[in-house]
Amino acid sequence: MNGRTYLSRFKRHLKHACEYISKGDYIQFSEKLWGAVTALNNYYYLNRYGRETVSIDEKKKAFVDLFREMSIYDKTLLSDIDLITITGKPEDVFDLLLGLHRYFYGAYDLPSPNIHHIFERLLSMLSKIGRLTQRFL
Image (cartoon, rainbow, N blue to C red):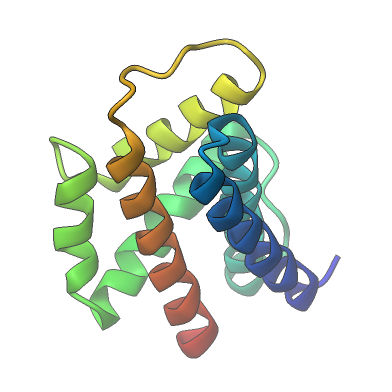
């Protein structure tokens, strides 16, 4: 697959995630958000390394590297991440996203019914990273 296809998938999945969160459908939201993240990771990895990510470890590395690279261009990503995690580490955001993916498959329950605001912040941050990635890669 080429980079444009992954970028298109990212946008489509992110759009659907926005639709599902507005309906309160956290199960579908979780899967669409995971789809957006993996599509964006693959777009980044193809541009940087000439191949797609395969393992969870590679997906995590791609997310962390992409976050750090894009935060050079937009410092507000650093404050965004502080609103999502206690540690302020992109690794922990990826772990949260992976947990949402596992939630979709029934492995976990949501930790709190009041987690909606975290989901909205994740959406906002990923949207920003996507815009920056398109501009600078």
